[in-house]
Image 1 (cartoon, rainbow, N blue to C red):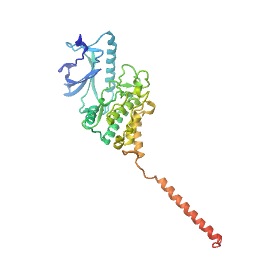
Image 2: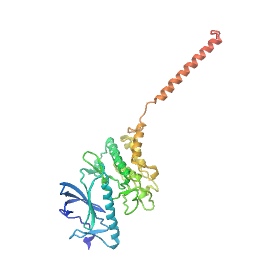
Image 3: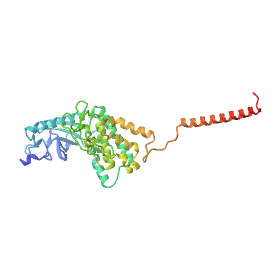
Image 4: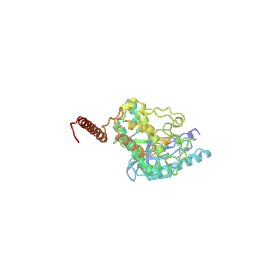
Length: 349
């Protein structure tokens, strides 16, 4: 019986749907297992995600079949399968180079699977863990480019009525050319699918409106909070305080309060992260475009350089005003001279 309380992946060389050969396990989380597999008909490597919530189900090692642990967990297991199908269905409708592509989905072994493209590179979590361990930081140009690219991905996603709801460094894949790709849509929500089903909370990243007792409408502002938390950790090396605590008393230091960061990164870049990370959803950006426009607007206003506001030349209108003032003074002096001459009888009118 003890064996049944553990999660076992499918054995290597297992064949699914008579065409996918399991090669090895890539990752095993609380809700699923991902495998590297060979798509035999198309001669390509793919990633297959299996719905396998270890709290609710176990695998029969002889047959590979997945069963709920008991009658009480059967409902939760069924809900997990429903969520996984929802995730695959949503992903299959999306077409953006910054979002992982889904090729296929199917049921087998008492659970469900979906097949995705195999992405090369590493997660942002792995990248920044290495950087922080070696005392390095991401260059300002690279960091701002990464933010703009992720905002572009989210702009597309939100326009499709889809919210990722689990943005964090581990779910952002950085490809060899430096371009990001969003992965793991297991917590995905839509305009109609809000708080139904299992709600995943990642302390430090999940916004307050996902916590029990604080739940409110899910929208783009939720992803903005999580993206802000991601860049907060990227820059500071620290995960923000949990949002439910910050909603009561916010003691989380702002990125703009770090002198070293102010000397390195543009203030509009830093202040945007603080705004996105506001516990009050009304104070956050309500769209990816709003965040993008905020950075560009502040840059145009002269706050692009690190270390504070750039000194700007006076606008032309001020120069014209100064010239006009000088002309009026000359006229007054001339008028006074004429009046003196008239009083002395030197000028007759």
